[in-house]
Image 1 (cartoon, rainbow, N blue to C red):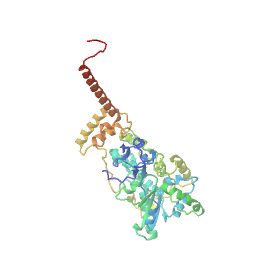
Image 2: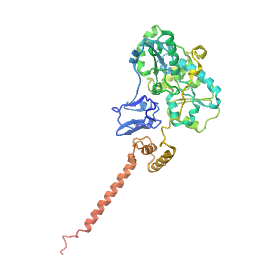
Image 3: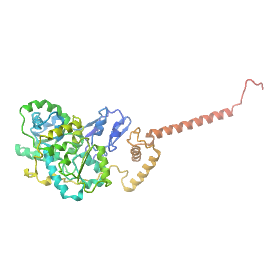
Image 4: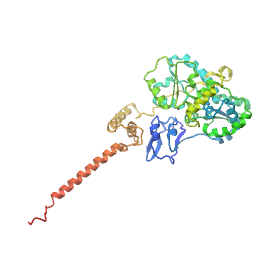
Length: 449
């Protein structure tokens, strides 16, 4: 299970100071601090990037590709995420950014927002034709998908079985590049410009498909400064490259995908803590049965809140709303793509439950271990202070059952243990002193015997 998923988030042990900021912010209890250093439990990690966001020592990092990847292919296509447009000031024409991407070395660009409009169109059809799946949960955020797989298995059947826009964009970009250049598919590199670690992880370990069509993933923050340097030249001679409207670009902010559903029967939540609350309420059937669609984004503000961006997410969100004023509603429709079959938009692999939190290899073993956890919980103070290196007292109890920790890791139990030991030692010393005094003749120099 530990190697089942690729994880883009990793720890730089040299930078880690052993503080507990990360363990308190991780939504899936995937981090422990032991021997003065943090440790990421890969089975639990969903690559949401919260630890990167809150680590004061910058010890949490993201695996990703860099610009030298362009040299590997004869022809490269950039797939800019919609959130890229929110990183620039006074941006009223995305053609400037797309032109700058070509000036910096890409041979072509294909907007992920263009593919988002195709996914929105198919999403509307799917939700309309499958009321038995209501509410349908978006699969655009890889962190949310993995969260549901490991923690909310009863909701898997509600997941929208459509590929995320970046994968659809990769398919279309590759077909167009082959048609334009005559090169083989292997000679063409499809490079996604991503806003978050989860999307990096998805390209390496995709959900619903056997393999990703994306050849490499670069961080938006890695290309941002380079794009800034090319914008003046792009302004002088912009190319008409934009191919999406409000619906596609809107996917970059919270509520944008839901707006593309063109329905009032939706719920949109952003921020991983809010997402978990919604999923818990959904599992408890607290929502109206008429709710059709749920959009969930692990990052606050939506994709603009990803840790691989550079701009404040709320300022970026405002910029994108301003940009949308100048865009048409939509520019992409499936009938305009003769070589795209609607079936290509769907998952081809089943989405399965991953029981990473189970306490045993069988139901019986899990039940026995669960009773042990409850026994340990009665001994712990239930303060969830994190001083033991685990995020909660329950997480420590489960770690003990799994063999990863011991009771004395709890400083309160350790303190009680030392107090008891000290009292025992004092009683022993007092007893020895008393015995010594009882065995020694009492002498008073003032009395003549």
